[in-house]
Length: 252
Image 1 (cartoon, one colour):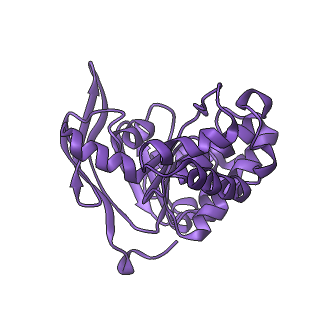
Image 2: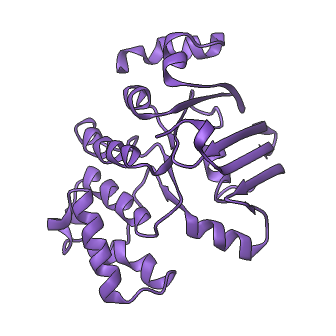
């Protein structure tokens, strides 16, 4: 967590546009994200925030504009896409763990397949990461044996196993029962304070206010606010942001 003045650019989007048929999901979205910065991306449902996040590793293709990740242009070039996906980890709403693999193997698989690590090295690393998210004692179990909160923490460990330069979180607590949300947020809080670059689409306003360096507010495919948490929560510029905050105020 740092200020923009001392940081290098890690992601830059320039006039990114995206349509789904007649629905205009993203409208000329331009933003720069910096190494070590934690950005919370907030806004009403359907505002474009998750679509924007998914364009950053080409889970959604953008129709026009330019996306540059750590100096690499994101486009149809498979070599570029492969290079970017090696450096950008993503944690989804659903955990997407392999049900037939143990927790340990779920975390160790990508370093073995993509980074060509030995099984011994990958599993040693996986154990260290499972310990970091408080689940080392669950390594031999299978996903079905874990709670939703535990599975999401495994998904975070799996993303970390690739040593990504950026971690993207797409509403990582929205599929969880309320009592499981805090255990996932605690892991994300620790990651934020450790200096990892994070972009987090979230409805958890208390977390955004406490942990983020920066708040981006989307509405109808447009960034309406791009500011500090203090400014956003105390004095937003736009009426749409004020209305949004009035609706969610009870959550923080």
